[in-house]
Image 1 (cartoon, rainbow, N blue to C red):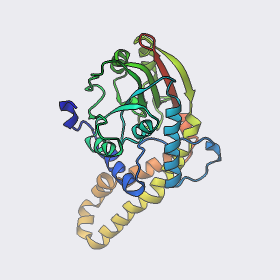
Image 2 (cartoon, one colour):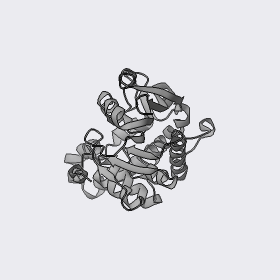
Image 3 (tube, rainbow, N blue to C red):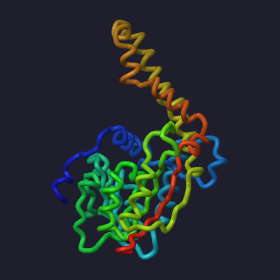
Image 4 (cartoon, rainbow, N blue to C red):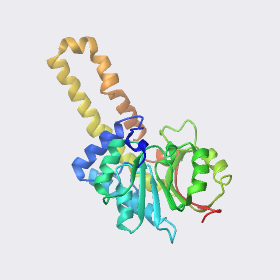
Amino acid sequence: MGAHDNKDHSEGRSLDIAAHILEFMGGRSSLHWGYWDDPDAVSKVTLQDYAEAGDQFTKRLVEAIPAGVETVLDIGCGTGELSARLVEKGYAVRALNPSRAQCEIARRKLPPGTRVHACTFEDFQWDGDAPVDCAIFSESFQYVDIPAAMEKLSKIAKYVVIMDYHKNAPDALQGGGYDREVFDGSYKESGFRIDDYTDVTRNMKPNYIFKNAYYNDLMIPIAETILIRMRQDMPLVNFFFGGLVRRKFLKIDRFRMKAERSADPENVVRWITYTLIVLANEKLA
């Protein structure tokens, strides 16, 4: 591993915290959306349902890997759930993630000697004797500089599999997502063709059912309970700093806003397009 493997390049810690909580509660922590085969039949989503949908997401992604692939680069590997599944399937895996905390969790799931790099894809240096057969972005494509990433991939990867989403409009009330126009202008220029393009947006719809319950039934009640105790036990602190605690630390108004946005699961298909894309490098594949 290179020197960059000891650095933590992550910009926030919310996913790191979520990873540790999910690992403690269920022994696994898929830090991506869930996938449902029959999304329109879902009216309630428990934590167990969500974990199983995360497994379905991983299964769907693995099924998309082209035939003949033996080596895989898992870009944005999270806590190693996908990498571990790939190893079980017989693939030789290298993984990378900008979060050192998540990389440590991933290393515990993977066989000794598996190379897990704590770095961004921009900083990653491929040192293999031959190109990797397949590079995978599991909801991590939205975090890279697309033109630079496609140019880099054109030199090191025979295939690229992307499972991620882009916004349907600039005013869509869903954060994240990659720029579809930039992607369309980059992949051909870098020598790739699309071998498969599958719209799986509706399969993601129950994620909003889970998000709504997460905020309404967990995060908002916890925040309100803390505020009540603060008013009872620390009235002077509450008088001077209650508003600040509510807005900046507990973020209760933000939780309510997010709950409202996810109240209608159909907003998923209005706001984003979630796709599974398989690219072939016309120079290497």
